[in-house]
Structure formats: C-alpha cells, structure tokens
Image 1: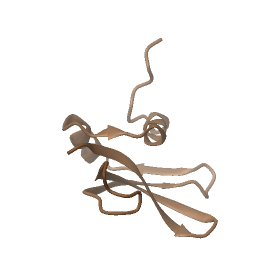
Image 2: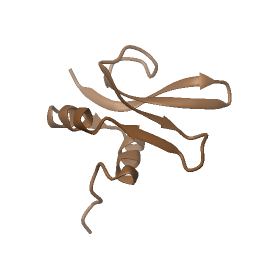
Image 3: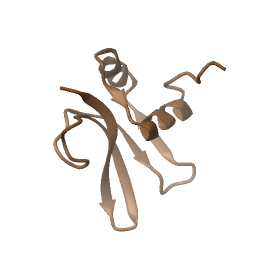
Length: 85
C-alpha cells in the first residue's frame, strides 16, 4: 500500500476549501482517507494553512510522500526545510 499526503477539496462552487489528508494512492481525490492532518483555505489573504505537525511527521517517517502542492505548502509554513543548493 502506497500512502500520500494530499489535498481533498471541499466547499461550495467557486469557494474551495481543502483538507490535507493522508490517503492510499488508489483512493479518489475526495474519497476514503486515513487521517486529516491539516487544512488549507486559499480564499483568505494570506492563504490559511494549518498542519498537525506531529501527525505529518509521523506519517512521513512511516513512508507517506506529500504531493508537490502539499510539499510547497509545507515549505511555506516551515514544516519542511528548503532544498540545499
């Protein structure tokens, strides 16, 4: 079983709100997930990002890979270190 940390879309039409979830790669985008590890709201300025840092670290230590979008959000919030040049 391959596990990813990715976004699940919620909210109304033209008003997206995302949950950051840990799910099996075979599950659909808004389908079954293992755990909610954060929230992302792009509708406010600045965009609201909230992570449960201990749970994100737990899942990453156990092999979960973040998607590129989630990885960017983690870098902006300081959860991931910038790549060394």
